[in-house]
Amino acid sequence: MPDSQPHILVAGAGINGLMAAYCLNRAGARVTVCEAGPVPNPGSASHGAHRLIHPWPPAGRPQEAAAAAQALPLWRTILQDTGCSGFVQTGVLVAAPEAVDPVPGQQPVRLPPARADALLAGAADMPGAVFFAESGVLLADKILMALCAALTGRGVRFLPEAPLRGLDTESGTAEIAGRAPQRFDGIICALGWKARQLAQIAGAGEILAQFSPRRSYVVYLPEAELPEAKRPRTAWTGFLGQDLWGMPALGSYDAKFGCGLLTHSADEQLLPDDEVRSKAAAAYSCADPAYRALLRGRVASNVWARFPFPGMVQQRGLCTVITSDSGGGFKTAPLAGQAACDAVLAAV
Image (cartoon, rainbow, N blue to C red; front, side, top):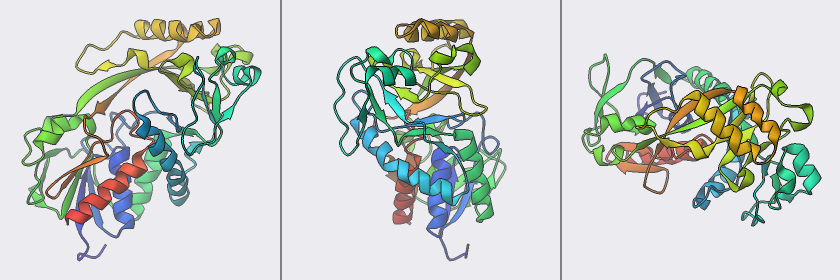
């Protein structure tokens, strides 16, 4: 990009950082992305096989449903632009024990019991079973790799193994490990919960200190572990009226069973795999005994950020902090990236 264009540093190459870099690049800015690990980083909260995108609101957070509905067409455009087949339209089934109110602006289909049960064993007895046909699964790792490749080809500079050590929000000066301090026209901080480690950074410490890490668990189960009639045919959420969610087996990816009931502060001790399997199997088996097969699954955990402020970004001087890592961060990343791009360029 011409030197006359603003030079923006994006700290963090997870999905929010990459999406901010994508929006900045399209806006004509020069972009440098620094990342504490490799790019993409398998240790980041963005890393993982696949993620749900659907317009069903988590309890008490209706704004997330509207954001996801707004993000889905943006995802389709971005994936087409980067040549990535990273979305699988499986549809998403919400199977709650009570009647489900319509989501504003959406057209879910109410399913008869037999159809619901054919998509997800145990859903037949759920009177609140509704189906969002346009929703589905984002293939996270595939998307991260495609974004990195596309941005590199479009002139974005990546600095792997280069953690942010310090920044001054008023001058736009950043200290990146192994490099002399450098002044940028603007800085986007997309570090998620790891931003807590930068709590003393001049001008942004009060924002960064409020990130609190949460750990969630999933159980991956090969499709062959379930009887043919019991294998999920769609993605699902809100199962049994609890925070049970997941995705069917897709290509080389095993079926993924999430159990939000196990989520806890990442400052607490990691749960043993056997305990995760046992509790997930018990939760799902309330719907169908076949889910006892989860006792043979592979456990994975993920740490993500909770932030108390509403909105997707917070601004301090020339620094924009992305705060949307609240468990729905991947699905709404196009919105967070654009919000951060707009905020940092306005500050410039």
